[in-house]
Amino acid sequence: MSTQAIAVGGTDLVAGLLGAGFNGAVRLPGEPEYDEQRRSVIPSVDSRPLVVAEAYSRSDLQAAVRAARHHGVPLAVQATGHGTRVPADGGILLKTTPMTTVLIDPERRIAKVAPGARWGAVLDAARQFGLAPLSGSHRDVGVTGYTLGGGVGWLARKYGFAADSVIRAEVVTADGHVVTASAEQHPDLFWAIRGGTGNFGIVTSLEFRLYPVREVHAGIVYYGIDRAAAILRRYREWTATIPNDLSTAVVLTRVPGTEQRAVAIKVMYAGAAEIAEHLLKPLFEVAGPRLAGELKTIEYADAAMGGTPARHLDFLDTLTDEVIDIVAELEDAMVEVRHWGGAMAHPGPGAGPVGHRSAAYSLIIDREVGELPDSGRTFVNFLGDPSRAGSSYAAADLDRLRRVKRAYDPANFFHLNANIRP
Image (cartoon, rainbow, N blue to C red):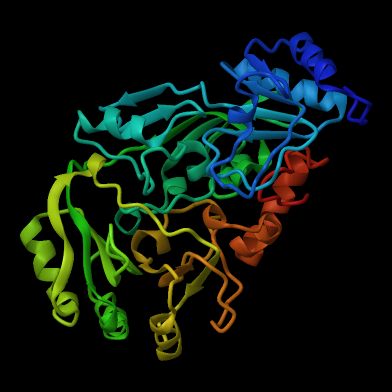
């Protein structure tokens, strides 16, 4: 197949897709649903593809790769749009949204999902067996993109990153072939996709472990903004003492439904309520009177707590007085300091290239803040600027990712992403 770009319009590309065996729906500019289907969840990404192609099967994904290569046009893959950071202009926007199958093997504690599945469907399928996936903060986030980027959820301190629980993936590579990536088959590709995002192919199915978590003690409680510095200083001391079952974040935000600035403390404890309340007492005692919110025991599947929009993200090895003072004085910004560590920092052998595992905290701010120290480290799931993809990885991992990219995608066919160049 030729990879040389040729003059091509939307109708030519439709003919190429159909000729390559594509059986899904194809939308052209001006047709119903084109504008709806091309949208990303991120408003700044305004894709103008020649066609939007909705895949219904693995063979559709292969056909889209073949057609894009034959016509020399770019191809972008999108499930829910949460991870779309680069516009898919002048080519094919390949939607995996219709491919939503979720299968649960309760005896092996394994889920197998298609590339368009969202976490809500996995949570609902697994809960009937008392099992939980390492899901994200929102039920409508796509499973595959989240997991391939590492995936840090509210059970991560106890069980690790979502990528660390992947046991097998089926991948359409840049030449249109299908391979199985696992510890035994294509182990280099298996290593790379568990943190390296969609740089190496299109994942058509993903298998990952589930965990015996039915209920958690969780919620968000709000305290006065004047206690921000005191809470963060206690948080620095307190997080050094807590077990991995407890995940928390301190957020400078507003009380829901009001304009009142407040400090929110997000909590999820994978255990009994009385133990959680005992562990939290030293943190709460410096926070002052509670303004709103509560903690309660609920099913894990119902415990999503949302996240902070990330314009600035950095990793901190400690919460210095300087950082605390700057953060506490920020006005009209949403700021999240989240405790990392635990199982995230201690994966098993052969774990994928999820970056900066040793960091103690992440710092997320919903706008750029020039006065803060910047370690230059970031996390690919939260990456606003795709050109900074390399800062998501340790140096040795980035070198190895580039070698795997050269082996599986030497022409950088999959580049409309947080790109790792071969």
